[in-house]
Length: 94
Image (cartoon, rainbow, N blue to C red; front, side, top):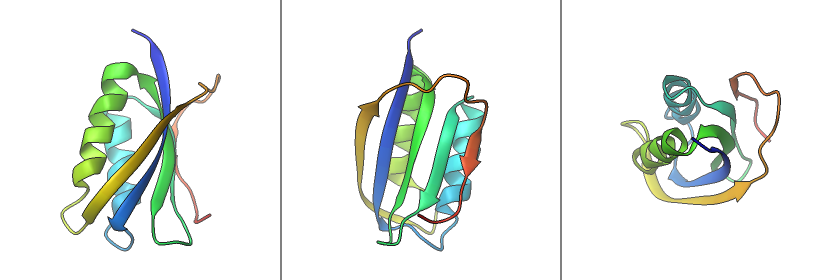
């Protein structure tokens, strides 16, 4: 299966509701690598890499988010694959 990397930005009420934790847990469940962080504009952004099907599942999960979130939209764009990345990280705000 082909490897894919997607950059995403989640809009809505997505900070202070464990969205980064939710994203990291789901990414790890699908064996994805990448990162997630809060932005200073009240959004959550990140990149996820893995097989196409697994990345698609994560993006579907992000459309819903954790129970306390209200997702308005998820922007996504394919970006270049990063070689040698070994985990999915929850990082500090941008």
